[in-house]
Amino acid sequence: MFKLSTNQNGRRRFTIGNFKGFIAIRKQLSRGFGIQKQRTFNQLHLGKYSIGLEKKNPERQLWNWV
Image 1 (cartoon, rainbow, N blue to C red):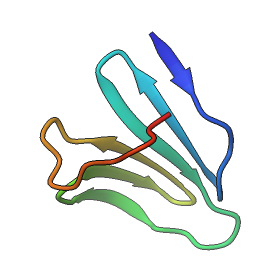
Image 2 (cartoon, helix red, strand yellow; image 1 turned 60 degrees about the vertical axis):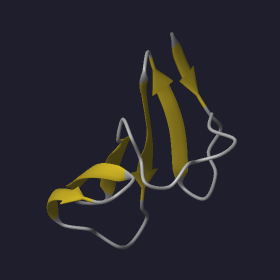
Image 3 (cartoon, rainbow, N blue to C red; image 1 turned 180 degrees about the vertical axis):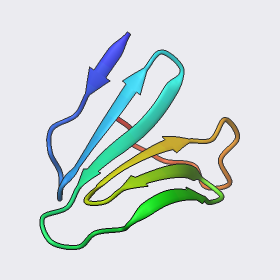
Image 4 (cartoon, rainbow, N blue to C red; image 1 turned 180 degrees about the horizontal axis):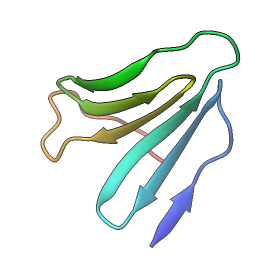
């Protein structure tokens, strides 16, 4: 199953099977290239694009997802 939300502040949330995440598209600021691991998401930064995947057991619960 694949769900994609509408654009909200440059972010689009998605669900693919059991994976939940978001895609961020920035107009000006670049986050560089790299991987960032946080308590709720693991993020892959590709310049002005970022992809975040929610962890299986996130520390903070997210409501109203996709």
